[in-house]
Structures are given as C-alpha cells and as structure tokens.
Image 1 (cartoon, rainbow, N blue to C red):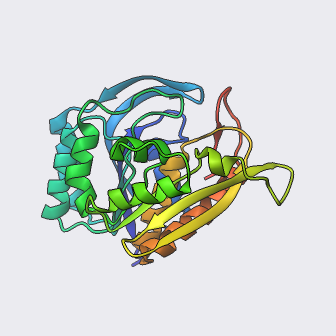
Image 2 (tube, helix red, strand yellow; image 1 turned 90 degrees about the vertical axis):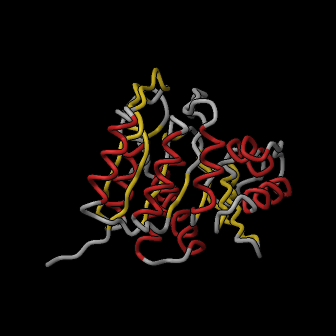
Length: 271
C-alpha cells in the first residue's frame, strides 16, 4: 500500500486558482503531499481584484472539519483567509481535540487589491486562539503592523515586530518583507529583470535569521498563500521550521520566476 503524507488547508476559495485553497493544494502537490481542504469562505474575484465574499455557514464549516478529521489526520495544516472570528475558535478546539500538529497561520487581512478579507475582531481571535498553538506564523509587513500596532519602516522595525509577535505564543515567526521600501530600494546585483531584493525575517525567540530572495517586476497573485502552504508542506515532511522557511523561500523564487499572465491583472504563480 502506498503511503502519502497529508496536509490540510483551511482557507477561502479563489476562482482564479491563483490564491486561497486552490493554490495551497497545488503547492502541497508540488511537495509530494496529498492536500486536504476545508472552505472557510467563497469569493468572487479575478486577477484584478476581489468583488465579494460569502462566508460559509458555521454549522457546515464545523461539519467539514469533523467529517474529514474523523477519517484522516494531516501531518500539517495551515490557515489562510478566515473571514469570521468564530472560525479561529473552531480550529483551535479541533486542533486540540484531534491532536493536530504543525499549524501554520497566515493571518490574512486584506487582498492584494486592498479589499478587507476579515470581519471585525477576526484578527484578535486569531492572535488569542491560534498564535499560541501555531508552529509558524507568516504575516507580511502590513499584517505585522496591524497585529502589533507598529509602523514598520525598516529591518529594525521588522525585528521588533517579530519579537512582539513571538510573545503572542507561536513557536516561530516569519515576517515577509516583500513590501518593505528599504529592501525594495536596494540595487540588484544579478540580472536586469530583478528589481532589488526581498527580505523575510525569521525569529525563534533566540535568534534572527534573514532570508534574502530575488525581486521581480510586477505584481503576483497568492504569494502569501503559496509561501505559508510551502512551509506547511515542508513541516509535514518532517523538516524544522527554519529549514521549512528556507525551503519555502527557494520554492517561491522559482514559481515567481516562471509566473504567467492568463488574466488582465496580477501574474499567476507557476505552482
């Protein structure tokens, strides 16, 4: 009998396939992991932006999780867009009930086009209920700013924000710095297609680690989803959080490099 490790994504559905649970499942497959999914919300969107969001019914959300977990126990799971605050409570409860490990939390707040993707109080619920049981959290600069109340303008601010986020209970913090102007402005040393560099900062409570990556011109859909899914997939295989973050960074460089543009807006990662 062929045995394959599994990973679960709990996130929103994206009709473009470029973000949300559809992208997560593609990432899992790229790592040789069988992907499981629970839908937290439906969206109407394309590569130019999000038009509307319809959260799933609470009872049906719970049923999706319970029916699935009674049959299969994933080696890792990640959360993406959780529109309602009660989803954090349900996930926290089921993670404990089913002894789920390797939780990766991508604390999604707004879409790339600026549309809010959570209702009021959802981020507070995520901080209080999911961060303390998370193996890794992956906020970007904007999300880290919202979560900490800081104005992050440089790498020193990133480190301070990572420290504050670590105090919220997670094992490892990864602050993705693709939107940091200080890093954006750095001159590229390799290749004319690059436009500066990207910096992701990892903090495990003891030491800071910096992951430098390539920056490419243009905007790309679902980068945060894919990055956190890659970390979850790597954890499912048995890698450490630090090794998983490094693997995910390299993975993202490759899929952005090969991105394509089937629509009129942002590029789609080649997952």
